[in-house]
Amino acid sequence: MVVCPDETTSYTVTVTDENGCTNTATVTVTVNPLPTPAISGDLEICDGETTTLTASGGTSYEWSTGATTASINVSPNTTTTYSVTVTNADGSSEANTSATVKLNQVPTPAASVAT
Image (tube, rainbow, N blue to C red; front, side):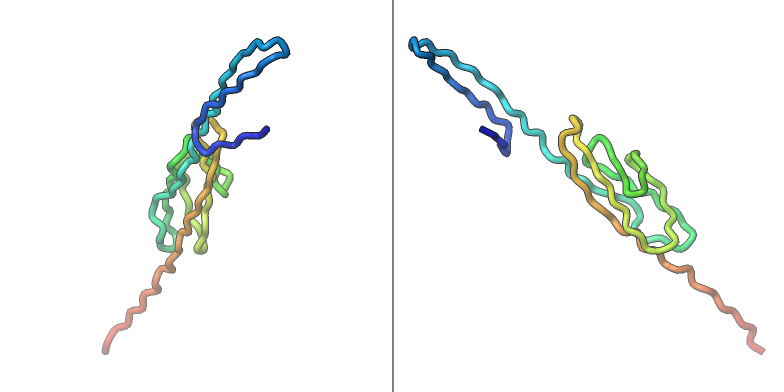
């Protein structure tokens, strides 16, 4: 029998042999909560700027860039979506999320002299 509980649960089984002798065993299946990933940081920057994206909600992180730190510095040359997978403390559960950094073009100033 395969058991996949939604919450930590104890299971007890009692066995009886052909002589009427019984014994009981109990096992507890611990369910660790899924991490709740989030990304914070400036999600709208001007061309040429850098922003720091910080992931939270877990104990280890893997970004779409390959970085494995909680924070990454990015300076995209176009609007770019970054995703991160976060893993909980015991490494048994992971979840992911993403954020898009919008790149605004720097305006081109025009100046003229009135005569």
